[in-house]
Length: 166
Ligand code: S3P
Image (cartoon, rainbow, N blue to C red; front, side, top):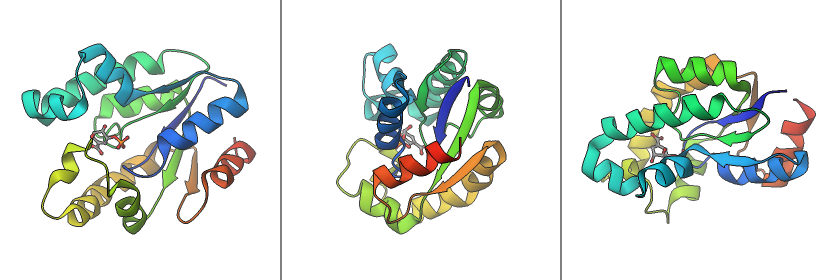
């Protein structure tokens, strides 16, 4: 197998599940958002504030394309990593793609106390999540080899299902 790549919306559990999967598979774990922060030397809210979403997406594309060329990683991606066609092509070619599906209700619960997601600073984060899901769900599905339901399921159970369906 090349890389094991997790896609899905904010609050799907990509980082948590990714870390657990990496441990089980004895593979290194990387998170595209973390990699963007390391390369930029600044956190994601700073990038959105100073460079706008477009600036963030440029940085995200560079990181996604690079990480997908590596081998044997478990890779967690940001929720918007599927927006660009170039990213979707890189992700598809980069390994096995697992879509961690979740409901907007569960996303809201999991992201409620998080200040690190600029897109959720809006007055109505629930509507934002619904709108994002409407445009992105088809894109996650387009590149997914496997779709896993994460709603109301503890991380260990999700990990077991991913492993059984690889
Ligand atoms: C984003 C999701 C975030 C991060 C950025 C934008 C999005 O990653 O990349 O805030 O567009 O959905 P997570 O999915 O890890 O929260």
